[in-house]
Image 1 (cartoon, one colour):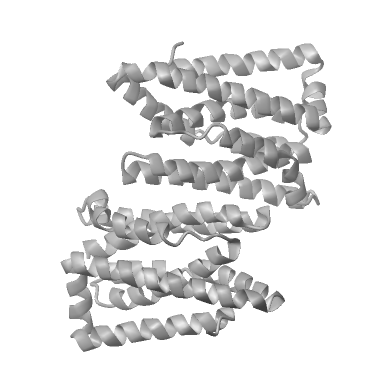
Image 2 (image 1 turned 45 degrees about the horizontal axis):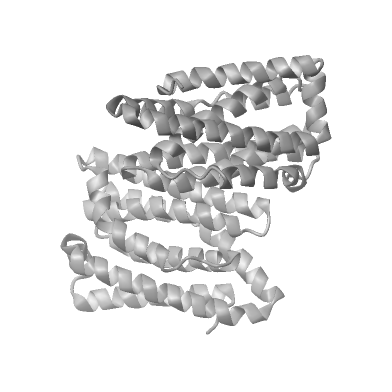
Length: 208
Length: 208
């Protein structure tokens, strides 16, 4: 449980940081402030997870530490160069994280199951980002090719960092394995996450 | 009024942005999250000011636009290179802004006077930053010299950007001038802001 809360906890802190900085790419101050507000929401999730880790008698710092390098590397290797790349990253990253951890949270005892699922229920980020990207692609269909490529790169980097975490963090891996039943169960989980990703790509107007 | 709300409004948006990025300099994840939380507070101030500008029938984007370059330049020229430099900037910048605009807000009609004063009453940033810097200097008095120099640079940059805004924005300048009575009144206001700055330097343990 601590490892799961730890990875999410650091994930939201670094997400706050990256969204705040991606917000500078916004075409106007209003949309910049919207992305900043979304960032502030991530920080609130981080704070709830810190509070829960403390309740469990864990040191939040220690719980997050194992995931700092992998998450920082993911974000360093996927720095958006434009407002739309930043928003595609929100949709893609957020979607995969949400789908994956929502299933993993099912394997948790209460009250952590509800806590994680409640946090993952926050879909404002993805809704705003999907609407923006969709409108931009409708206005200029040429954007679709490069953004689809970008989305594939995001998925590639996410998978490679997830493998790294899985290889290093036995407790988290065992939780997923035990919860899924067996390796076949894990494969099914990955299949569902992949299907969710394809859905989101369609919603964005990125069909490739 | 719109110009005053506009400069504060963009000031808090850019402050959110810079604090979020300075937070990476924190020595641990706990203090990083505290600075991120302070940043989120700045964003909340920004949002209140946007709401008020809209109420007044102003376009928030247009109200902020004249101040973007000066505030961005100020922050670009005063990027902290360490956690402590970041905190000294919070104390110094925040203190000057608060003292100055609190007086200027006195010249505003209601309800804007109360709105601005309520926002400026938020002193969590400065309290946290002061305590951190003070403790660091008590532990290592050698830090005091370089940080005092840094603080002087901050004041210098703030003054030069404030002069630029004053030269360009007649309405804001006239508000200050009319409120203060005359140039002598403005000089007195600057004197009070300077005295407040000296007090804060003493509180930080920076006596030079």
